[in-house]
Image 1 (cartoon, rainbow, N blue to C red):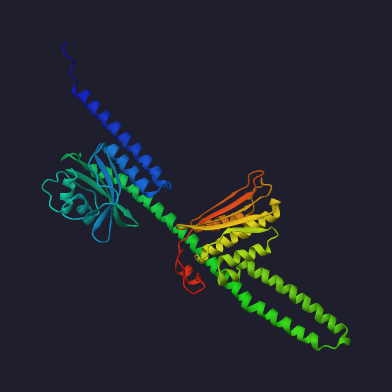
Image 2: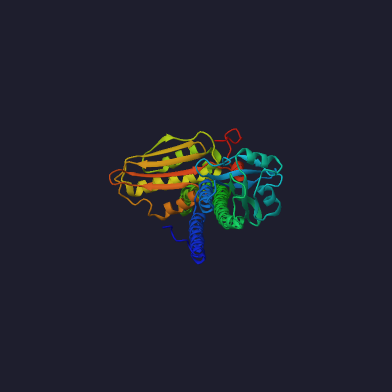
Length: 411
C-alpha cells in the first residue's frame, strides 16, 4: 500500500513552517550579532563571527567582509568558509573592477548580486572563478555616512541565491555598521580622555616652571636681601635684628613649601633630566628605603614619564603610610610598545591599596592613556602596584621629551 500523498494545503503548511523556522533562525542570528556589535569584541573576531552567522543563515559555502581602500582595491578583513568551501583569506587585497558584486556595490552603495560569474569580465571575476566561486550577493557597510566596505556571500554554484538574499545580507551589514560606529566612538572617547590628561600634564609643567622661575626666584632674591640687611644691622640693633632673623626663617620655610608645591604639581627635574633622575629624587624624599631594579635610560613620551612618576610617588606614599615595610623596590622596563612600572614592598600586606582616592585618580589617568593599573596586597605578602602604559607618542610628547643631546630617542 503506497503512502498517502500530501494535499496542496498540507504542502503549503509545510512550506510556511519551513519559512517560519528559517525566519526564526535568521532573527536569532541577528540577535547574536547585535549583542556582539554592542560589546567590545576585537574587530577581527567580530568580523569572523558575523561571517559565520551569515553563512549559517544563508546555507552558503563562504562569506567575507571587505574594506574599501583609497587606491581602488578592497581588503578582506573577515572571512568564513564551510568545510573547505571557496574563500579569500583575511588580509588579501582584491581589485574592484568589472561587473562583480563588489564593483557594482562600490559604485552604487546599494545591495547587489551576480547569479553567474562564468561570463563576467575583469580581474576580480577571474580571481573569483579561480577560487571556485560561481555566484555572489552582498550589501554595503557604511560608517559616518560614507561607504566603508561590504558584507559578501559566495557560492560554488550559479544561481544559488534566492530572490532578496542581498537584502537579508543588508540586515547583517547594518549591525556591522553599528559595531564600527561603536568602536569609532570608543576610540574617539579614548583619544579625548588622553588629550585631556596630556593637556593637564602640560599645564602642570607650565605651572611648575612658572613657580620655579617666577615666585621661587623672587623668594630667593628676597632672602638674599634680608641676609644683606642682617649684615648691615649693628650688633646692638636689638629688636630689628630679631625681626629680620624671624622674617628670614619664615621666608625659608615658605620657600621650602613652595618647592614642595612645585614638585607636587610637576617636578622640574622630570622635564629637565628625565625619569631616572626624577625617580631618584622621589627615593631621596621617601621615608622608606627604595631600591631600583631597572630604570629606562632613554627618554619616554612626556605623558608616559609623568604618569610613571606619579604612580611611583603614590605607591611610595602608600608604602610609608600603611605597609610597615623595611624597603620598596621600583622596577621600570620598556617591553616592545609598552612600559611597565611596578612598585613592591615587603610590608605586612592585607591592605586595600586600591581604596584611596589617589590611586583611583591614577587609575583614571593610566586608563585614559590606554594603559592598565593593578594593585594587590595579599596578607603577609606585601603590596604591589603596577602600571602598564603604551609608548605611543604625538607631536606634543615629542616636543617635551628630549634626550640629553636634545634629540628624541624612540624607545
